[in-house]
Length: 122
Image (cartoon, rainbow, N blue to C red; front, side, top):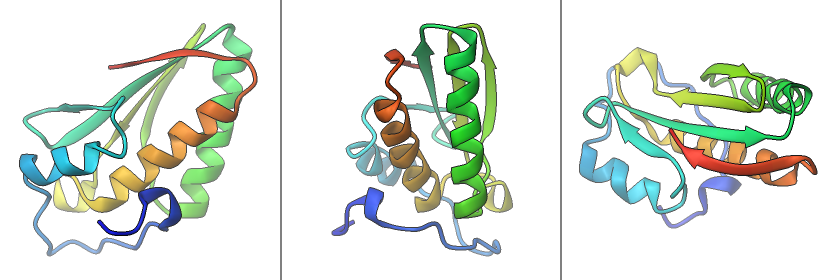
């Protein structure tokens, strides 16, 4: 992890590689500290808080555009004032570096939203 995750691009994962161990995942979390390691280290999750439904929706739209550009698609649930993002690499049923690349880039999108409020780990 010598290069910052925010400077990397997701690479296609075709399976056949082992998922990150919980210890490896914790090291990646150093660059995405607001995210929570869940499901015995197989997934990361974060809840972003916003002032309105529209603000949450706009974040989800930007997150969807990023997911398409990176070719890595999170699960997103949102409603009035929040968006919860869950990341894992489905092909390997666990975490991959790509999940942390997306997490850091999603944090950057949320930080750039002028109406974003506080965020909290899910």
